Every structure is written in C-alpha cells, then in structure tokens.
Length: 64
Image (cartoon, rainbow, N blue to C red; front, side):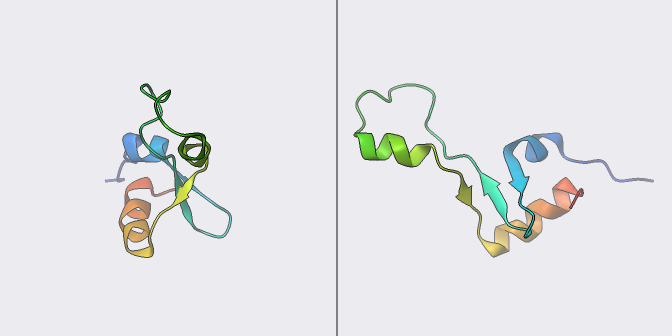
C-alpha cells in the first residue's frame, strides 16, 4: 500500500533546491509590539533545520 504524505509537516516545511529544510520562526501572531525591532526583523527570516532533523522530516514529506 502506498504511504501517505503527512500534510501537517508538508505545510510547515519547505525543501530548497539543494535539499535543505526551511521553517518559519514561531511567535509571530500577537504580543509583538513589546519586542525590539531586531527581534521582529529576525522573525521574518526562515530558519534552516539541522541535518539530523532533516532526515526525519523528509521521510514524512516524501516528495523530495
């Protein structure tokens, strides 16, 4: 039987052309007015995942 893609994982992570995994940083919904501008700007950038986590997440996505 064909294995299904984990949809929650596939929506949260993105695979680059070189095979790296990107994810959005958390804490962007509310209470952001109290944070400094440096923290707010850093939250806009995507974060690369570690190699050990990448192997596990790619098996759940299955479209690489």
